[in-house]
Length: 329
Image (cartoon, rainbow, N blue to C red; front, top):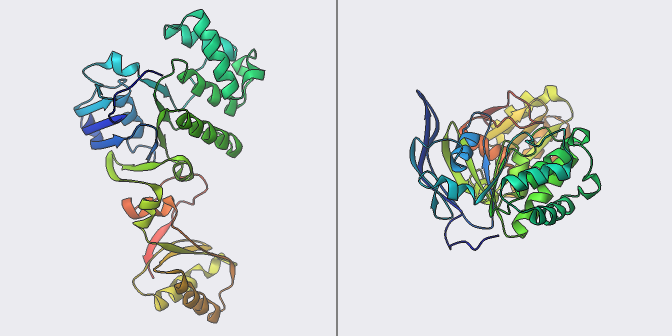
């Protein structure tokens, strides 16, 4: 990788994008440090992809500024593009070519010599566990293999900054885990990663810092632990033996701890605790009402609960029921 100046990997001031009367990105200020995984978390329509496209010089900026390692993305887009590798939500590789042929094609488009392409392609195929499939057509690849190849293609020019736009969309849990390992390996190799995602688990697991974007606006930035602290130090999570008992359990918690907010859906309840010892009184109250519990846990809040607290609505992550509500208990 080229020697870079000592400055933020990404710096935006008032970054804004309008599409006619619709404001997709609304005055976003970002400061991404070199060598970190920076997650941008938000549901579909939050403005994540539009923001990334402006940073990648693929979409004109309506107002505000964006710098990539000190380079003005709008004023010097060609130089900025040379610092960026982009992987979109869906694989951009050619199904009719082999993995090595795809890497060769993109390498030559980036101006690499044939010798450089052979060397770098070989390294990337090994790095992403694709060496054994180098001469197979991409049409024969699994979803996880295609996404790993797409990421390898984005690295063919050895850019210091990688944009990953929802890179695990549509992948099974095992393939998602492999992609997370690949992302962490990029940072260990000296690169900076900006990752957009709507998977809360993904942001929690691999991002050093997280920006929460909602309706185009930046509502919070911080380390996952710092964002969780905004909700409260601990959460009591209950799984009821009978979902039909949810209303009775909520009413009993309201009596014992009036004024505390609770997250609940049929059969599952989550409420904040000032300290773990408070759980005993709440559990005792439920026991006296003969409300049977399947499981009990005291833990830090999840990023799902953080998102709800910051925006007033749920993020549509897989595995989370719609229709979750908030009430005072």
